[in-house]
Image (cartoon, rainbow, N blue to C red; front, side, top):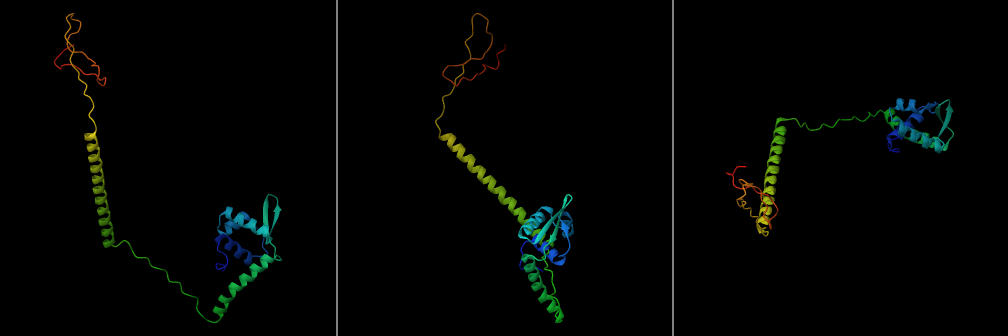
Length: 195
């Protein structure tokens, strides 16, 4: 009824209830349940209407009841707008014209075998393209890393030599040995030596 004048669904439902039941008193939770609305946004709208003077809040115990002030200018304007929106539809029905027929819009059915096959082929093509892109990018990265590794200056090589045999007999076989000037790594001697 008030769709053209009020864009908020909650405010519109509240105004329609006020116009339909101006002498009725109501409270927040009961009205929310009756209109099928959430409590918090409805509370905001009721507070706004109370501040504007259209509603009066009456505290009874721990409940706040709202009454419509039928003498307020806001209510009279709302009532006038409500009567203007109802008048054309009543006049049209009295004149004998039929109400407009609403035809539901049919959406295309996406479950036909051809569409399912096309979607499957598209998905397969997408996976193949993603795989090729991944292989190409990985190959380019490996090639650039290999070329950078070959272009860099080569590091000095650490030479590990087996120890010289000791005449005292304390060192038998190969032992670990660090060669100065290298990276400081360890290397074992010959593999045929025993400890």
